Image 1 (spheres, each protein chain N blue to C red):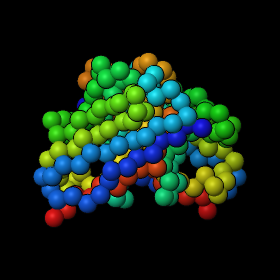
Image 2: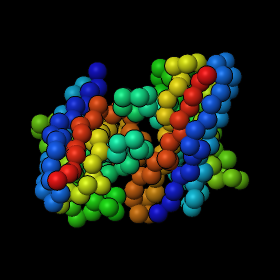
Image 3: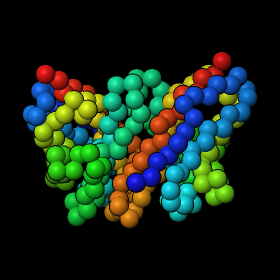
Image 4: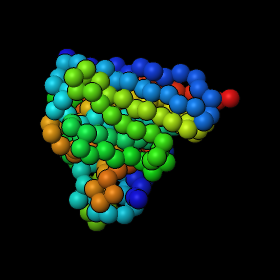
Length: 122
Length: 112
């Protein structure tokens, strides 16, 4: 079955960096776009970034542009989120999510991981 | 950038029908598909409606979606409410001119 497993979360001081990873299985990872979505404690969902299946298109929410980088390694079936210059407001559970359709970004996320928690605090 | 506005909470009795609205602030609701996600406490979101009115396999027929261009809004309707429907529901859409995704603020459904 389709499965996404995030890892790499933790407690980090403001201004530091963290890299999240998402391991995919049960589908042909290299054919699908992938998203990162976050949820601050007690708050709603907030989309962070998306990459197309081949990394030719990448889009970000304005608040993370220039600080976060989404990437993927199709040979390892892994999605990444490099987070630099972290701020307290980046504290959240970070989910990776899979695009529904092959080879295109349609912004419908059909499968989500269980999430990894990032806490930015001094 | 646009916003999607949902009621903060709704409540209804088991067996009844409830409708959750999602109003788009700018841009036509009909031009960009709307998805609806259910999130139970402590769990990841799952899709209950995609592309305005499509149900993923495994989602009961009790869940339905629609859009209304006159009010520039989308709606999620749940009929025959069950206690297991108690959850947070999020609408989601996007923009392609400045590519990004927006979620509504979420609606807490209480089935009492």
